[in-house]
Length: 353
Image 1 (cartoon, rainbow, N blue to C red):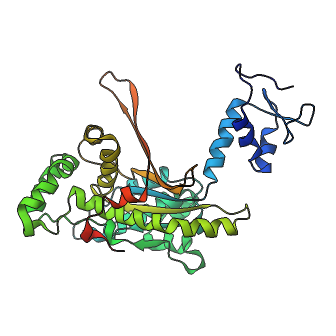
Image 2: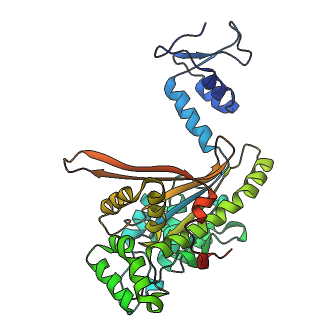
Image 3: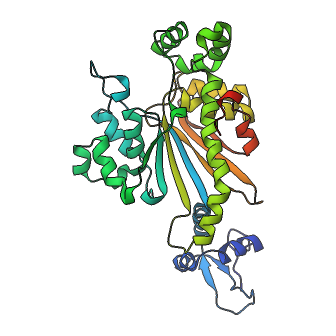
């Protein structure tokens, strides 16, 4: 009685996928369509339900979302105020930055399971709150938003949703010989190109004079160290989440890492270099205008078990652009990494755990 769809009878794998969906998912699918799947007995003439190819694919994506995972969003802060006399660490987001951080905010963030890790600067902390929970705030709450007022709203149950993570800060001073060169490239709009291509060699050449300055490898190392912490924590989290799961709570821990131009990109570019080579790395540097991420721009990491039961960090980043002919294109990086690969980016002295 199975009816063909697109000249193809459902495969055993497709039938298995449908069988493993939650009852509510199956209920949502029983609304007409063009493809028949037998009941669990697989016998002809038994009760059947009908779904379309598109519904099958959508259901698979929803099943993927339901996997137990630690989701990490790593991004740059949004646009800050520039007020004379206000120290950089105390600079707030301006109105444009607040509105944009909310515009690109993650939909459906579970406040209970989410936290922000940021450098010890007001703009990164506020960006994290807005990127994570911006869709949940009312217009009135946003109109007079301050870091403190929003923290009062989201700090439910006594837990602080923002944690300072010094490994996400930057250390380039415009007063040092190294820093003067770095800031010169920043002013020319070639900061990221300098970081990737020249910063490591320059710091090595300067020796002790630049031992505390941020470079490509040093910034990537510190971010890798933060991600590795979550990688090591995942097996315990997965076990507890699986044992306590009742189908009503999110199986996803969310961590929003907010940092600065140069820091965020260095880790991603090192991963691209590891998997795709320097040419692909340099392609992205060029697409980022040789300067770096835009405001609130970043990438995603899902730490989870893959289909073979292996723990992986699934890294995804997409960058739409127009080629020289004006045609719409997209740079896509979508790769899995294991713990050893992430750890390989950590400079020995940077390890904190």
